[in-house]
Image 1 (cartoon, rainbow, N blue to C red):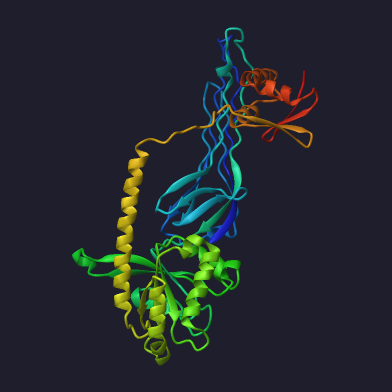
Image 2: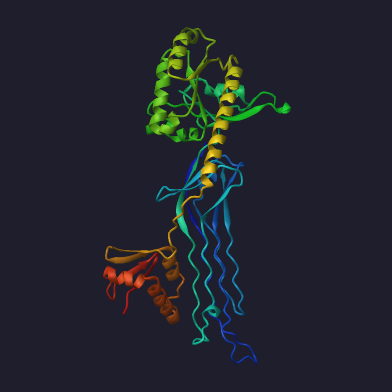
Length: 434
């Protein structure tokens, strides 16, 4: 069974608390503050590897947490940083935020890495809060909480060419003939329950004039696949990365017409994703060694060519016409690669003109009222509140000054906040005072 999707919870480590320690040593009567900073929390990364081809590692374990930073120590010693964790996934994995469905990363290359949850900053020790009027501050920051969220993992196979068509059209047989792959083959529907990959070599690789590409056998599609009927909904995603589709049609079936099969499968591709239906296709009438296929071939050839597709008649089982098909596929792929390289070069020229960036200010925030609670959202303001020790009078005084400087106090007053109202900053709630 191919496990090609998963949902997991990732949590970065919190930063260590800063120390509010004072130097106490013999013969040093006025030692002063010497609290060190807390260590940063560990972060959570995903890294692609070609050594994996399934997401089964995340079927039985769904929660992953990085290490927290250690608190600061006396003598200005910083706490140790929390340990990062790196989660390995197959190349071709798309990572999305489970709540918004926003794509966080698309890992397609080996050792490509992305951070999905950043560790919290360590809190500052009391040595950072010494001023000319306060030589012995008792204030120290708490460590910043690490980021946390649910993410979904979706594996899309990385193949240059995808084989599509009805069950038993001969896709698995074709894959076994032109590559070293050995898929399960039998004369009943849905023999292929998971995608199979194989590498096709055209020409003479040893002499330097060969060309290779990856061919994927996708489980057979049926009418209604885009709506989840049969196996279609589960595996249609695996043809999304392919550059080119080889559409295999059973030319000897006594139950169906090849032309209607061709139209039905293209309809399912269009229903699932219009970009799939727009991909270049090479149409193949299989089982041409049988009399039924030979009789249908002239009419089918005219219909496909009139629709604007290249068409081949082959017999995968008899190895008839397969070499010509693969050579044509290789030439078509090389043409597409050249076109992609030209478009990429043109895009780089446009990028050299320089994009206009309008990043959001780090101090930006919003104030809303939800169910009687005033909610303040903003990256910096939430971090400032979360790192303030609410049990420290000095810390709360500093927070009040910071909120005033950022304009949060004025914005809340304009929103109608009253003494005693609850104000929420991220996961922290405060009662608004005088």
